[in-house]
Amino acid sequence: MVVGPDVAGHGSRSAAPVVPGRLPLLGHTMSLLSTPFRFLSTLRSHGEVVQIYLGTLPMYVVTSPELAWQVLATDADRFDKGMIFDKVRPLFGNGLLNSDGDFNRRQRRLMQPAFHRKRIAGYVQTMAKAASELVESWRPGEVVAVDEQMDSLALSIVGQTLFSTELGRDAVAEVQRSMPILSKYLAIRAFTPRFADRLPIPANRRYDEAAARFRRVVAEVIVAARAEGKDHGDLLSTLLLARDEDTGEGMSDQQVHDEVVTILTAGAETTAVALAWFFYELGRHPEVQRRFHAEIDHVLAGRLATFEDIPKLEYTQRIIREVLRKYPLLLLMRRARTHVDLGGVHIEPGTEVAFSQYALHHDPHLYPDPARFDPDRWLPDRAAKLPKGAFVPFGGGLHHCPGYSFAETEIAIVAATVAARWRLVPVAGKPVRPRLTATMRPSRLSMTTMPRHA
Ligand code: HEM
Image (cartoon, rainbow, N blue to C red; front, side, top):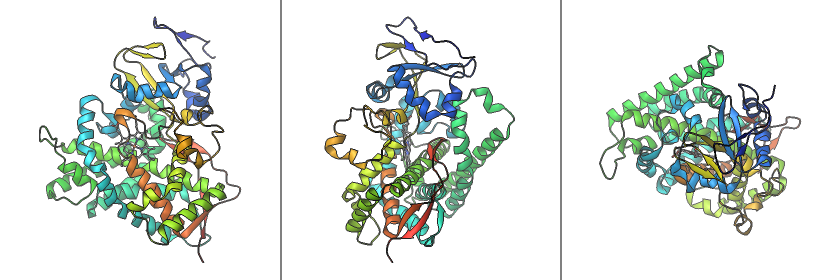
């Protein structure tokens, strides 16, 4: 049985329509989990502000870039992070991704040095070395699982920039084991009702065990690093040594722990997924690939890429933007702290509000022929016409991703390192589709390695 059409008024000036297809108890959860991309893209046809139900919990979804920007940036301090973040709190604790208000601001200030340009320039060597080791291990004509290899590479890069010590290496190995399990179940957990987390089913057991192992191994590295008290020049040292300018206070071990877990989770899969789609799209677009290779050969002339090369890789950066447009996170969520007016709809404090980055990035009014992969959309005169909120792969406003420059640098360095030696060719007859985990992952992406130069 489908619950009939209805509108939710809240005594407001106008009402947000409830999206058709709501089921008793389940709400729209099944549509969201089974056909998430299609479901979220259809919401704009019902209005600029609509209501969906996660189980029995109502959630308002805004569908225009202007309202998305209001939620993210203009009215950012009228919102907390919301339900999805409550659900993942047992894993992330009070790390940046999961905190709000003054505490979040203080933590962002303390962590800023870790993401400063100068620091990122220092991480480039780690990025290039890890990418080189991977491409050196490939043999001509070998079929590689690009999705899996990018996962492992991105985790190893963020892991090595966090922990440069011997003990850190063991931690990275453990994180490599637990992260795929966590990532597989995180989105399901986030969108299903709370009681489902406690059901004695294998999925919950696997998730809980992986989360416990992951948190334990990170805790061990922190205790050891604090006891040693040295600055190893890695991200962990930056976190341990950070001091609040006003109070002189640093972070507790528990807080460092939560930030490390957050960085590992927020920084690895997101970047790996972007890299996998980068190679996928190159493989399907020979002209894009030709221009990309020409730029890499011209700028790098056979040497490893450095931080200073990145601004010169203009076409590469347009490809990266187009990848981030086409394959963003599915949904960002917030909870209203105060009364808010969204496009004439009154939102009560405590109400869950969301918007879909995927739906915005595939809105044909903003991006003609949105399914087409076209890096030249990002030529400056074309990109300048987009309204704020139309391109938000890293969010915006108060919680704008602090790792954006890290991620863009890593994608450029890895792509350039691969391109210096290899062309990756799609394996015929193996269709690749996006699937929903915490990010928009490709299904198995098998590609054949072809040497570019004899
Ligand atoms: C392509 C790669 C990446 C994408 C698409 C991405 C996307 C995002 C988005 C959309 C947000 C905002 C979430 C919200 O507003 O609710 C965010 C926040 C965050 N990201 Fe990233 N990210 C990427 C890479 C990274 C990296 C490499 C790191 C760290 C090394 C990182 C660390 C964080 C943290 C700590 C936050 C929380 C900030 C806060 O809430 O104040 N991200 N990211």
